[in-house]
Amino acid sequence: MKTEIGIIDSNRAAVAHELGKILADETVLYIQTKNAHWNIEGADFCDKHKFFEDQFGQIDELMDSVAERIRSIGHFVPTSLKSYLSLTHLSEQTREKNDSQGFIKTLLEDHESIIIILRVHIKSFANDFHDLGSSDFITGVMETHEKMAWLLRSHLK
Image 1 (cartoon, helix red, strand yellow):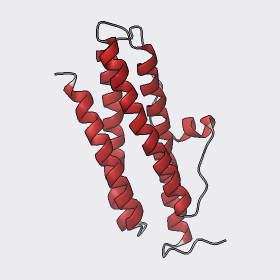
Image 2 (spheres, helix red, strand yellow):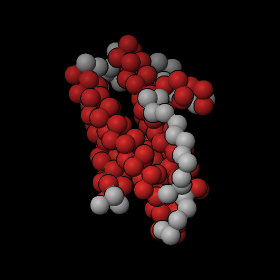
Image 3 (cartoon, rainbow, N blue to C red):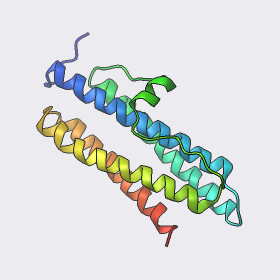
């Protein structure tokens, strides 16, 4: 059945494609945060193990909400690892040392790069594609990433 929500098909397709990229970024960030949770070592293991668990839980919720937003505007969600790797702007990280400071710095950089991309899309979704709902939606996603970045940044002081 055709999706009739007051946004022309080409605009919905463009927004869905960009949301697919955001979903890919969320998925890669989720895996990177799981990596930190699973592989953290050091005197602060217990504290950081739990901290990373809280963070990947939030990202899991973001992933689900982005996927649902794509479906709500009438498109299917990319779901293969191959598609995520082709859509994400993030890169996989390898480390020599599994310390909290290294994991936190890497995760913070990724959150901040996602925030910058989301901030650009807030205006383009509203102004270029006339999708205020998706613009508002990613504003909330951005705010979640801003808070998560603040928490990461606080561990580096």
